[in-house]
Image 1 (cartoon, rainbow, N blue to C red):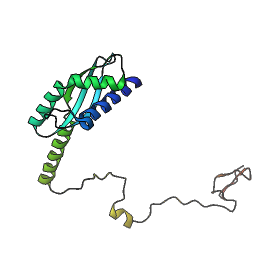
Image 2 (tube, rainbow, N blue to C red; image 1 turned 90 degrees about the vertical axis):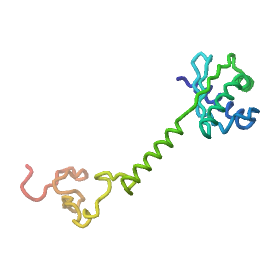
Image 3 (cartoon, rainbow, N blue to C red; image 1 turned 180 degrees about the horizontal axis):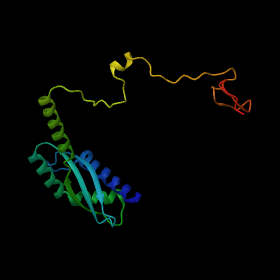
Length: 172
């Protein structure tokens, strides 16, 4: 989807949201409506408008019918605000994302009640030390002796330009 089409979708969404909520449709059947998304076809002839409606199923059905009836009025408002060559034909669809989220949340709560109180976060091994690990003491870090020049035994001393030995055999 191109950048232009995304801008058009967002503009249609903002226009419809303001017309439906701020200016308000005169139809008493329209309840609390939120425009959740708009998908316009690339030729700008059709637009799917996804809405979420607060209320029961009958309120939802009445609101969807009222939006379908006011489709011409809403398309005229889009045309007036966006000045497009073609105004897309609007199709309204109920967005059930919120319903699905609430249903999942209820299912998780029921499952938590059945299983009892369990922690919400799942501990990841290796991320946090267990309580018994700290009592064992520090892990052997393989201590390294450092000479007066600051180089560790057996390491190259870049400042002196020679290999530092650990005092054992000659390096020749």
